[in-house]
Image (cartoon, rainbow, N blue to C red; front, side, top):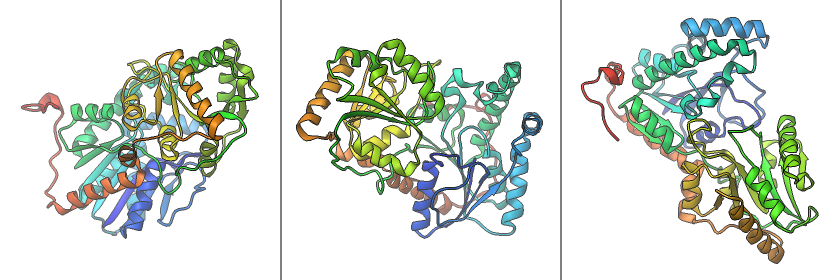
Length: 421
């Protein structure tokens, strides 16, 4: 197949592993792919397929503010991106358009290009603003609190635009059961759950002895209510293990370090904390091999904290078969998969955390390392290579169907009947 792939920008440090794994797989299978995205960070990752970047902002606040006002009024960003992509692809023919987005952009571009060429479009949503109502304002909140009313209007407008595009697509994919259920309430078009996962060529088990029992966390740390490490801090105070033998290793940015330092000091466990700078993605497997426990931070899923959070950190720990400690349990999608794979503990109280740490500490004392007995038949389902194969099957099925001139689906309020799931 000839596949046109559209995306928001590749941002450091992860550079969209969900999309990159799919592109690597499609290219290896012999498909021809062209990737177009918004220009973001330098593309410091290997790729054998072409990536064309479109620069939309110049980095100045005035430019950002004016263009976002235009975006609010007439979707300037998608219109500009579409024009640039059309100019670059010229008369090249494609069998399918695939688009991945964390919010709304560039869904409209994907559907409009697909409609012009009478080819199918598949849209992939990695996030939906409804999953975390407390986060709705973060798109604009960091600039000025006076923009709060604008942020609310911006959010409503983009939800409306996103839903309109979902109803135009031939199929929609997303990352968790919660997201899949929400999409089914928006459109009756075919929708599919394709989890995030781990790269099975990179994240493999390896028994690496360590001199100290390490609980390792990699990545950004978000403030309450999005992430809450308090159960871990309470458990550390209860167990009788010195900081020389047990440490929590944080590989995070300055903001994350300051947040954890403050919370750990308040809890009286700062001596057990060790801080490091963020590391490149290629260093993550080695850190996880060296871990005795891999820490995943989340919080109880609800309308304030958010829903459907399936963090990449969890999948990578699953790939290397290290014990996962998730605090506190989301009691939702992530907790379900942790039980399903037997990869560790999704904790609801500090007693559970203390017992889990002591169990793994005893294993480390005996062997010099830890290894989690995951359910192999379940683990393989979360390989990114397995998931890329799911997309390929979907693409082949959709492109094999005769394409009719598009008749866009109307919103649910205008349907004669709404499917139930």
